[in-house]
Image (cartoon, rainbow, N blue to C red; front, side, top):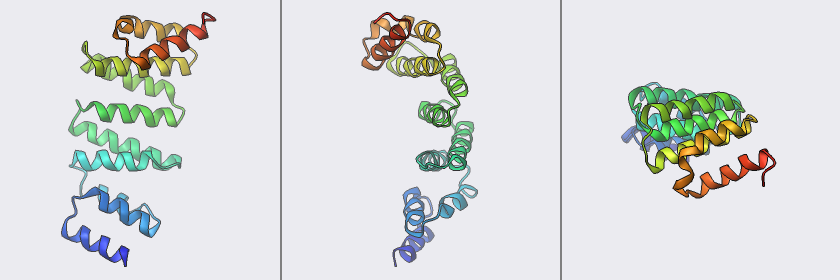
Length: 167
């Protein structure tokens, strides 16, 4: 019965993404979400939520779908930092750290300012460099952020110095 009523809810209001997600869970298939991507490919919010849905799955092909959703959403709203962040996270989940770092660096180069969001992006970029075995590059990224005293940045700086054998 739940399947029937989720389907009816979608008929009445097809713009509520969570109903696609719930229907997918009830029927044990990603089909409701994937089939909705075409008619709502103009809706960045829908694409963002679909990206999050697929990013949360374990299978690589579904994570690749998440990347497609984030890319389409970024075409519509290129300044939305959350999309850049999530895309970088999915690439990292796929062990594509070099690409993840490139996404973070591109956001910093285009939208970065002297603010907390930029500091957090730099912290994540430095982590990617550490994951690639480049502690000096990580330190270089965070050089201007030492005064931020942002906890995550301090932890990343500590990891970078540990990598140099300077605990």
